[in-house]
Amino acid sequence: MSTTALEIPGYVAGTYTIDPGHSDVAFSVRHMMVSKVRGHFTRFQGELALEADPLASSVTATIELSSIDTNNPQRDDDLRSANFFQIDQYPTMTFRSVGIRHGEDGFDVNGELTLHGVTRPVTLALDVNGFTRDPYGGTRAGFSATTELNRGDFGITTNIPMDGGGVVIGDRIQVFLEIEAVLNPPQPANP
View 1: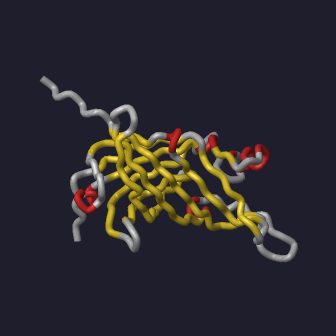
View 2: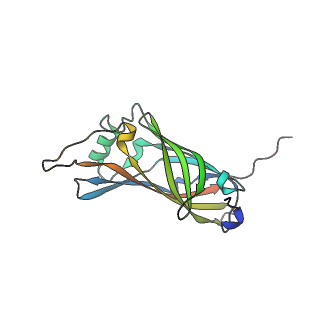
View 3: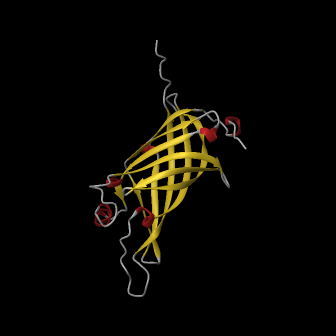
């Protein structure tokens, strides 16, 4: 089953750049087996190539791991260290889509995530939030996406055991993306 652009209200094909000032790359992870810690990354970039057939579209993104913010500077420094991200050796996390298909409530974006020197397949559950004109004459598109990662799959295996069983930091990471992207102006044709 193919999707036409007409099935997505206001759809505008083209190459879009992620607007980091109006986007959020966030996550949550179980803490002490009883609650969740939330955080996000403040520096990231990416590009979406939206095709006339939305299922032929693609996305690439890069996240600077040093920009992690969990509202606790000491914890953030530990996450940047060799205990977790090891940012001196692996400063970024990257995502590259390899296919898009219809999902349960929207689309599934299949891709490859590279983190901590390891590349694994990841599927994002994607909702298309819409397309609109901005006050400056440009076109913007909005998307929400979620996925779940196991940090051990990427070689991040630091565990701190608790006295009563369990670990201080969970293995499963919930990822939440709120993306607003701006349509790039058309490039002039070469003479």
